Length: 240
Image (cartoon, rainbow, N blue to C red; front, side, top):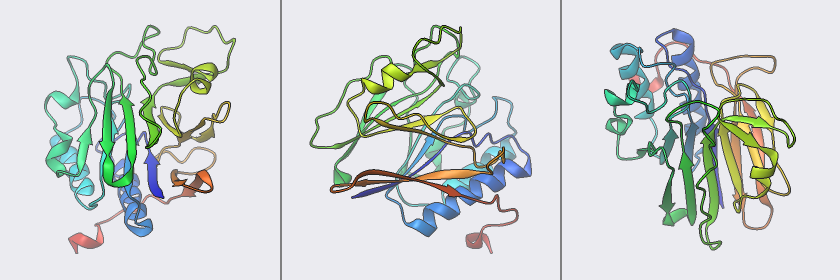
């Protein structure tokens, strides 16, 4: 059994709300003792985030010890102006992995029997297809996909950037698709492939901020629970 906390769209910008949202995510990781944290893009709001806000965000990542896998989204894409040209998230610790290859990359956590295919955004444009290049891992592992983009139902011909179609999700050979871009918890599962947006931890929206608690269970399959969180202002207990 593998327990994952899936979040996205933290949008660290320097304001207190985004930091408080990230702090609440880390609180949930610690409270639930998950095996892995996924941050599915837009960790930073732009390339102009001040150094002091960056430092505070990395300090929050240091509070957890489980593996953290993060990808770039459309707000923090890995183009020539990327914030990641001056910020290395892995300086928060060896437990943090930044999957910044614009073509996608595969990660293995053998102690969890878990394989991850992760692909973020280099250029947020209609030509970008977030699931292009996916290669399924061997089925003796749990298989998770992490990407960032806009879900569209089959038949939708709108000219949206970074489109992820219903049919593409249905064709994936994986157990869970962790999506970022939408700020609300949304189930976009297709043909037995479990796929969700987590919602944003720092954007209340209509349902309030939340994260996804995902259990990969050998008997019960993939279980997804929307876990409401409350952005917590002030210092972390570890800092007191």
